[in-house]
Image 1 (tube, rainbow, N blue to C red):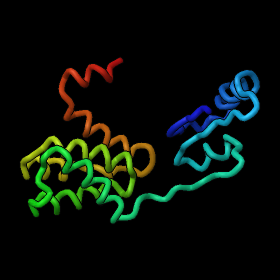
Image 2 (cartoon, rainbow, N blue to C red; image 1 turned 90 degrees about the horizontal axis):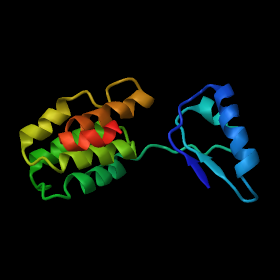
Image 3 (cartoon, rainbow, N blue to C red; image 1 turned 90 degrees about the vertical axis):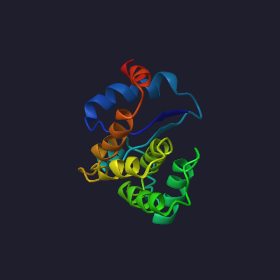
Image 4 (cartoon, one colour; image 1 turned 135 degrees about the horizontal axis):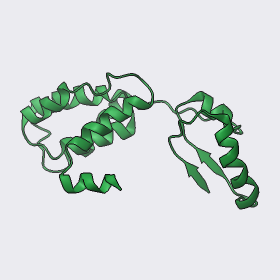
Length: 155
């Protein structure tokens, strides 16, 4: 089983160079390649047996996932202002699980209302849809990492 996650390269020639050797030399009977993408063009290039289009999470499910992460480290969910800010931030994540988990995890380390408001005021989710949409959320999370953790990403 080979999983190619979050594929964005739409150059068909590059995929022929990458996939043909994998399919011909490595893949044996029962081998499967799973490709995840939000690009319909990538899906068609992969010549899949069929696409399975995933919908974004509902508002209710988004809130559950976000709240599970955001309020896991002692942040008071019963503080009404944090809940209302959290719901607005969760809505900006547009039902994308990775965005919800990332933002919830980031906010779990903040205890103060003004810290949550500062995150809310960032333009997360307001950028161009597609691959840049999730990147703005991940960049925001990266900016709040310790300098030691940022070094891990340099590798």
